[in-house]
Image (cartoon, rainbow, N blue to C red):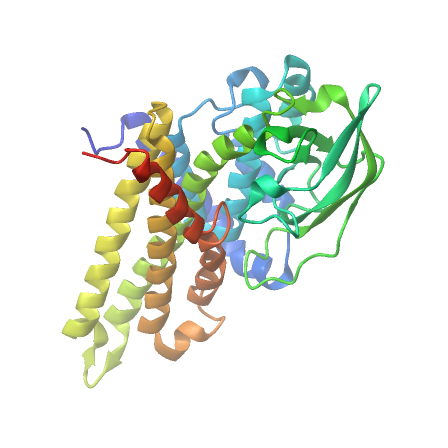
Length: 383
């Protein structure tokens, strides 16, 4: 049980940290204010291997572990949480194609995804199917060598900008076993997009409904076999939950460090406010909870890498804890900044806005408790 990073992981961390601080951080305010999807900088990240972190090397991926990915996304998120979170979603969609797609599908899509010449979106949620994802209604009917797809997806990161939509559709009955996964290109006939959503945060990535009206997609674009879609979606979410938890850690760490610096400089009643015991205790709790969340994240990532039977349990636990802690640390940092923390002249309020949604997506934290309780009922989680 070695809690130290390996030499390679240290190099990966340092590379991601430098890129996050040198490229993302100086631009994050502008991207947020002007709602810019930073295509150039995303492709720079891809040049470092961050667009296919756990995609195989055959089609340009980095073939790294889930633990490596958690390290990377924490560092990128400290620079710009919204942009790092989009990269994590792009990685999840690319991994699904790499893991479950045929040789034809992999060769068709992955080379341009791992360079971010093309961008990917993951399409599961629907207006009437959120936490109850298995109730999705988007339907794909076989017509010769094509599927004809009708329905719509909601809250899609990359919606309207992405080039490939890895989409869960219903090809069979109304059960989870009736769901399949298919890669739909942006130029497929019958696909369209809703207006861009007006969001509290995550403004450097577009979000829109994805609509299908007799959308024709070749059968060869099927990812996995018919009926495997829900299983693929849930397996993808194990890693997605780790990634979004890691993004929460990066934002929280940036806020904690900013709060430490601010309270050391800010003087009230003749002393730096950081000398007051109440402030010191708050910082101590922030640092302690952040470290506990990081340990949970890395343990869950190691279990997912090892394909342990309890990996899903630990991914749900880590996501629930890390995203709750991440938001709380950011919010506590805002409180320590007083009125200045509420101003857009400081980055704290942006981190608060960007991390709030982490408690909702990739399965709400209430659903994480459902997942955990069901696994406990099945006898998992015992020492």
